[in-house]
Length: 299
Image (cartoon, rainbow, N blue to C red; front, side, top):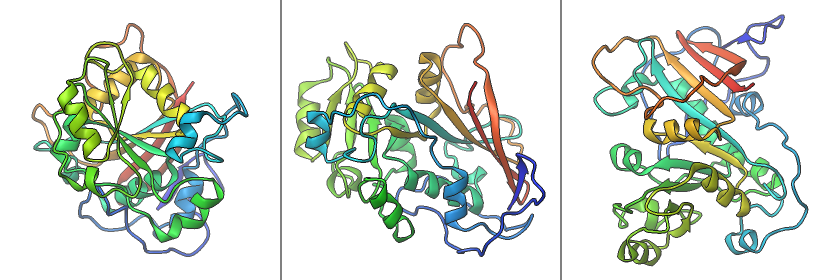
């Protein structure tokens, strides 16, 4: 792997590779492909490259909900939330091939995927993506145990599913056997029987909108109130489009795959267009085997 931006005297980071692969628990972008463009970066190097920025402190008072969930105390306590997205796209803009992102991924993409999960407090994901990609709970990873403990984080990121209807299979491991309880973000008009079924399965239902839908800004605030301030979303495109339209996305980690698919696959963000395009600034760019791993932050 090489660093292309910011420009430095060396294109590859120093150190020794760990040779460890991606998350494995809930990986939705596993794929083939070889190395190239230098040696494989260690997970510690990737974690340093993708570290969350230090955000301003809002309050030093721990909320009652933080105490209830066990999240945050020392992790996101008192800090403003930072929402980053992690997505993959082909050269011609496809975010999926035949409905899944795996065919346009690569091993380096999966290492970054796993690293971003290991850095996050919570992973925000749309219900349709949960159904299509077969989401599983995030797992604890030995390489990140010490860092997460030092940051006051739990053993693994929580998964927060955005769903208006709660049309989800609550018998899946995502709900029955996560290391930390799965959250479901929904509107106040969610079907009571589905809310009861979710809670019976062990999920924690959070109201983050009036009516049936979820308000993106309210969802971010609700997670921050529970101590989840290092936020990561993995889409899908409809959810990412809603987050972009609401102006709550702070950072985009975009893998550009050296592939062309044609067809009518979705882009990384869908839904109605914004009134004015939102400008983001390039923060870093890595390369391996022709894949580009970019980071853009809100200008």
